[in-house]
Image (cartoon, rainbow, N blue to C red; front, side, top):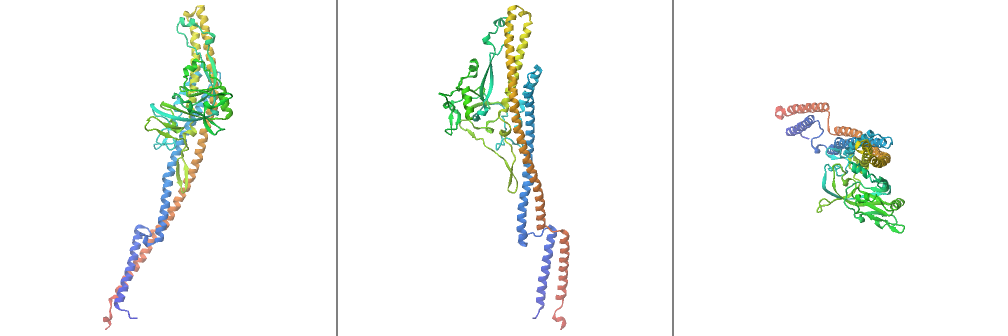
Length: 507
């Protein structure tokens, strides 16, 4: 085959250009330290790079954003639960102290002061937030657990579920002593029938007081036989039906010496209490009945619980824009790994019982009543020593007053001891709830830490795989570039020699 000069020249140019392209590619690789700069250069590397980068992007989202956010949320929750447990421990300690029958006036004053300070803090921990999101309020992270200020015009319709287990004894006291201020009042004395009296009734206490008048049709119990919610007034006990009363005032009931008939159920809007006659209480207990009470409350004080976090309810403040809330399990989950999510929140209704505040209020009221009763005794004893009451008639009358005051003090001490003894059990249960919540939170934190370690390892592995797929070692590129550049230079020199002479040189 005949090889012409033009063929040699053309082939030389092709070879020179190939070497030059190779030098350019290696020069680009040396500059970027990447194997390819365009997908078309190596589709396999490009496809693998896209997959690895996508996985690495997800890992970065989990490891650098989601997991730290979840950890911060849990740390805030743990801190709040720890403080809440300390508060409940303190109340529990006061209950133990108050349950003794050897209290001095100083002891009562100390208990009262401690309880008043704890009452202000009991639900504040439920307002803890993480980066502006409240951690105990489920999906409603923009709302505090409690009202931040007094809201006199805010109104809710609340449906509260209670059961036979919520029935408890409550002691009510009438004819409390009013210490006389002058000799004329002293001479009146205290008749036997006007002495302080104790009345023990069964009651169910709601989570709020100062409610509106209850519609009797909104007081229901679950009838196992029919499988439906029935009006409590339709419950038959023996030959009679339950007599539901919702329009009696608490003052009228007190004037009637706190009397309740066996088949009566009386609701008092002032105290948020459902007083049960003995037959009604026994029937509900024997049936292990569940009750549903729907009531309205207008006006909330600072620190009171927002009903939507605990109950099925309806915000009826604006009749033209009523907002309905359904109590449900509202778990906030963070995706912390591939196909793995973790619940980060703890709901207030699971750890901060709506009854805690009212229980502390009753403890406070009981110790205040004991202090007031003993102050009356002290005041009357001092009056007996005053000259203006030294006559026999005044002394005899003061003895009656003192007997009544001492009886009231005995009742008050006994009531305080019983309420505080019951409080020991109640607050132990509240503490157990918080302990259980902290245990559950701790197990979730442990899972999160394990996931974080795994994500750290996976992130390092994917970074390494991505680097192996895309990156090149600079030392290797320099060696290859030097070889390619030498080949390019050699091709230039060879082409110069081959194309430097023609056939004419030999003629």
